[in-house]
Image (cartoon, rainbow, N blue to C red; front, side, top):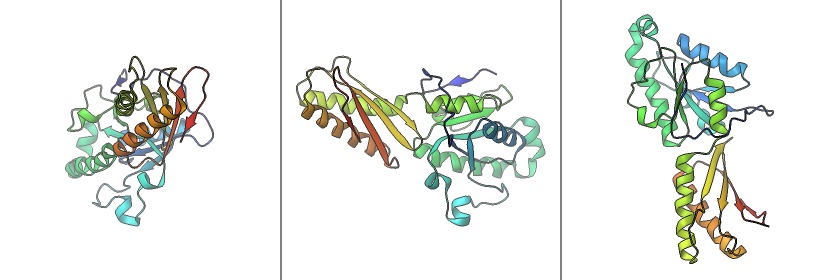
Length: 241
């Protein structure tokens, strides 16, 4: 099936093959499709972490040992697997609890603005309550390539927050907004921000814009520990972090 791309604009497909790879969180890897998805990710050099290892237990990893993968690793995307109808029949006894426990992990990810990818091998729409928050859907064969593309692509939501803050700062300094904007990528637990400002903007003005953008991004996502801001200005290579 063809991948369906959501709010993340996949304008640059540069796969992450650097040492260390990506960290991905799956809500579970127990059902057959989830196992296939996890194997595909690992074969693609992606490190897979799970919310839970037992669908019969209410407790997730954080409740069992106090170690939530979201707190331990720089998660780049969260994978939710939509089981095929045959799997639901196979797990009829715990199908209801499976859906509930999976939803729990998705809520944690959405709260942190982590991209949510739905894996569905049936070709049918995901059809779950979290549809508005799904950033992309694909089959398990496509998942490794897709999550790597997401990590290398600008985020519409973060970019909008940063651009709005930039425009407010430019208004304060009496500068024309024009086509000036901020582009944000979220990867490896950090934000890389590229800010375009008028050539007439002084160093002090750019510093003020950086503070405004940084404050807006920290309010939007308080879980991010590192924000790198670079200005796109002729004859300038200033960077703020």
